[in-house]
Length: 322
Image 1: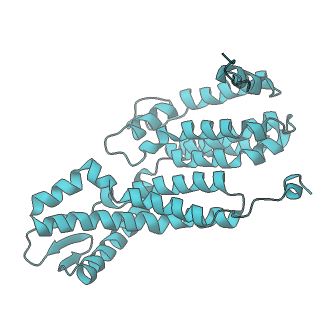
Image 2: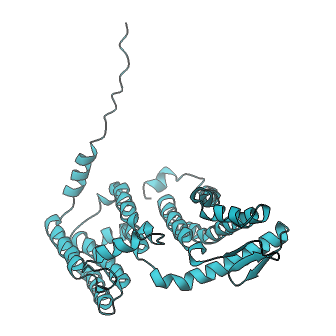
Image 3: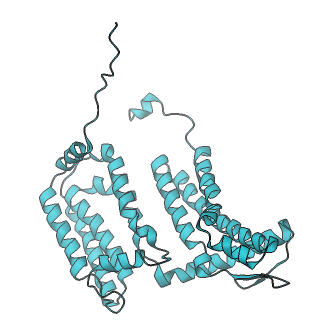
């Protein structure tokens, strides 16, 4: 019998081998690890001054408390470091050949991070300290590996901004979102669906008062807005190089998130109109029904990305850098 064809394509190195090779390619590894441990120690032992809120000096304990709180609007903060590490790994082929070396001007970023933390510690605002931690962490990588590294890793480190909890600072954002979603929902239901929905601030009810709903802060759509902005930012920076297309993708996530929240509110009102308040409450509290409006919203963002993609591949000359 003829010999069966064998696939002689060499397999790539195991993950741990490739990771070790990438790590070994970085200069100044030992003192970077030392500085990183010192930086982590600072924020662990002297990171949180709000002992009445979280009885721990660690900023990381405070952050975990905020992220893991029930109905937290900041729970995505637990996912962001994983996403950042994944993007850095995805960019490893671009990062590995970069010229690397110590770059003292990056001490300015480390100093800025330390100054932010000092301010946050004194005024008892751990959110400011969180920003300082990530600014300083970014600066430490530049201090060890240089300006080209800082430039190439700006976007992954930019995503750490989504780790900063909004807390009480979300109110200036959530109230306009609540009011805007309420107004659009009323127009959609009254003029398109022919229902008679009455608005009183952020409260929705009908003239018979058979149902009424308060568009509370949790229903503002801020959480979904944050998720969509983060998703569109990652998609834009991975798929596009031009800042115009990246900006368009990120800006498009704002109205898409608002419309998705309007659709969700409309589903609640239609259920209450068709049945009763309890039916509307079921739609409001249902986790799987709450996701229904956001599936087409994410699909719309992907569709926009497909529509503005680069339809003509680069010529070999351009790919060669000429």
